[in-house]
Image 1 (cartoon, rainbow over the protein chains, first blue to last red):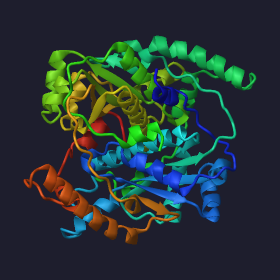
Image 2 (cartoon, rainbow over the protein chains, first blue to last red):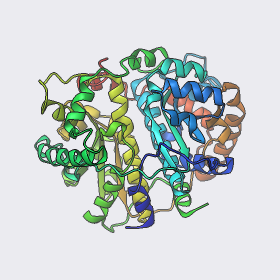
Image 3 (cartoon, helix red, strand yellow):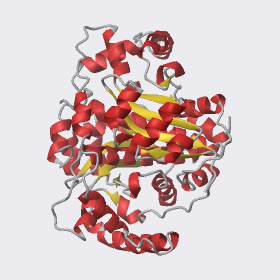
Amino acid sequence: MNEVIKLLNGHRSIRKFSEQPVTDEQLHAIISAAQSASTSSNVQAYTIIRVSDHGMKEKLSVLADNYSYVLECPVFLVWCADLFRLRTAYELHENPDGGYISTTENFIVATVDTALAAQNAAVAAESLGMGIVYIGGIRTNISEVAKLLKLPKYVYPVFGMCIGYPDQTPGQRPRLPLQAILHENTYRPEQLPEPIAQYDRTMKEYITQRTGGKRTSTWSEDMKNKLKTPARIHMKSFLEEQGFLKN
Amino acid sequence: MNEVIKLLNGHRSIRKFSEQPVTDEQLHAIISAAQSASTSSNVQAYTIIRVSDHGMKEKLSVLADNYSYVLECPVFLVWCADLFRLRTAYELHENPDGGYISTTENFIVATVDTALAAQNAAVAAESLGMGIVYIGGIRTNISEVAKLLKLPKYVYPVFGMCIGYPDQTPGQRPRLPLQAILHENTYRPEQLPEPIAQYDRTMKEYITQRTGGKRTSTWSEDMKNKLKTPARIHMKSFLEEQGFLKN
């Protein structure tokens, strides 16, 4: 196993940061690595908003499920899927009808482009000794976040990301057995029950140990609870208003 | 700049592979790195289908825009967003009503989880001296692909990925200037025209040189053409039939 794979395998989300700052030069190196990720037909359909203003970070940390580390992290980035820039390019040559901008295909392209770039940024930051955590909570009050960041139509915040030097060394959560996620030639539902049962035992042990017995739930129980609870059901109407997913 | 960032910055998509095989051990190391990526609330909502059957690869290469490298690459993976596994977990504890599985939020979670894992796999493969290319073309005939791979409901192929040792050294396409993609505190549309114009000049020069003058289009022209042309407009109805994006 080489050093890069060791780095990737060693990932843990970091939610407590030291006061050591991240320099602009470092941040630009991280963003440059992000930009080097693959992008569908070179559309580069994402925009990164660095939120440096303290008041805005305070508001965002409340809007994003009250995570204090959104406020406390040295660098907070909001990763946005962005088709507005494409429309800007389009309008340099065409009437402002937008073409086929609102398709579900373009929504996927922009979302995937954003995630690929962000993951490169995560790896780059960790290679510099920093830690990161993705903030899906940015979607909990997505309309307010979009207003605060003045996002134009055809842009939506996919997730946030805290970056900084770690001030904690959290344990690493085990993952599903390989058998559950890697299939050969066709999808094999019959391949799932055994690794899920195995993972349930692993996670129960892990969670029990980590919480000193306060939580003892299995993975499948956690997933059941997740699917049973409505979460961010505003996403569809928000995205449609932003000009996405029309056809 | 450290070695990891150098590796990330050096990414080029590879579309021609040598005959040197990728071992199962290497593939498993790549997948393990993929699994180490962040995942929303530990849902791990993706499945990787390795297509090793020659006949199936032949069919997929035709379905995916006739890319010969889908057939020729040593390893071809289809990266699927997967909520079916979550539903399987759910049904261990609940009636099979599926809960809130079909929300747009869960669609985003699964799509992002898939992309983060895939990008880690890409980085891991490149760290081993291999090359990769993402195959968005897998969505061009997505219903046929889903049938061929026997994908159950709540699973969709986000993209394919060819992996192998490079038998080419393609040039590296320049990216948009930093100013176009990094904003501070709020989205600033006024920040776009200048870097787009600058990038248009850069890309025109790059494309003209690379194609010996056969193509001379700018980036904004390419984007205009892209938005003007309907592409994969079947995605919405396909995804709805698969159980996604209902609410």
